[in-house]
Length: 116
Image: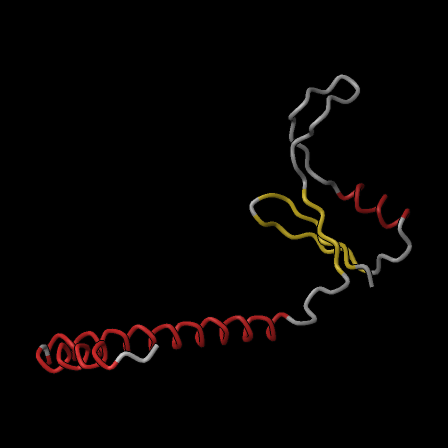
């Protein structure tokens, strides 16, 4: 396991090629240093974002409109539809736990119903 000849050969190689050995050691140090810095920054960013959004929209339901997947009553498959104010009134009438309904636009019409 411990072979003196191998260790002597390693030492001779290191001392003969000082510049190469120094650059190799610096490269290894730099790689480990950057790995530690990047992991620390990533974990810090993750924890910071998690703490910022903690408790945000806990009792919310988001409803997105999309294209239909089945034909219905003569309408074609794949047509697009939007929610209307009447749809929100129907939801509020059928689900008694809805306290607020807040519409907002994000590329397409999106309705956010807070269930508080």
